[in-house]
Length: 209
View 1 (tube, one colour):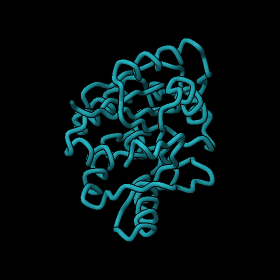
View 2: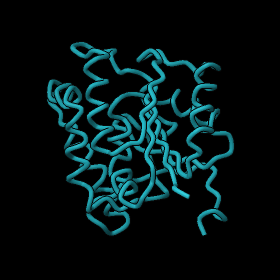
View 3: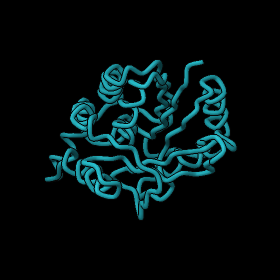
View 4: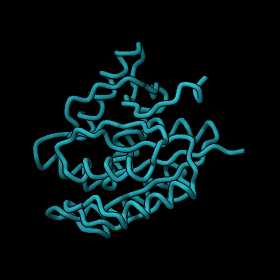
């Protein structure tokens, strides 16, 4: 029986930033990879739906994802809507993932907060692994995944979201540098070069041992 992973992000690029290295490793271990993108990410200057979706499709192919679901919520205005909860619930039931990744609850971005809330409502009692975003607050991971062997591939994966690289450079910032800093810090916590950190929710030890 093949195992599957479902990664849920508010916008194109969130998944790759938060758990891209882990997904790259898991696909090599034989997991089927499924992605859910809640919005089309078009709500800022010089960025359009078409650009973001093209970038996401390139990233999905690089991840060897089996399928990417787009729920077409309005970027910047996500609501914990029963219709969206039903849509995500159906996807979770269809994919039946052994692992679910989504946003950490405490975040400056309202869409990230809402994605977490919708995922909790849709996933019911399943274990969630909450990943770090560049806008996360007070993120203190309790679970780590060594991505040292995958980091350069993750770097390339993030670069496929070229509009985001441009956005940060226009703000005199570097998305590459920020993500590398997070992953290096988490690596130090477990004694490796790079790691992704997660906060677990409803973890069931009996299913891990």
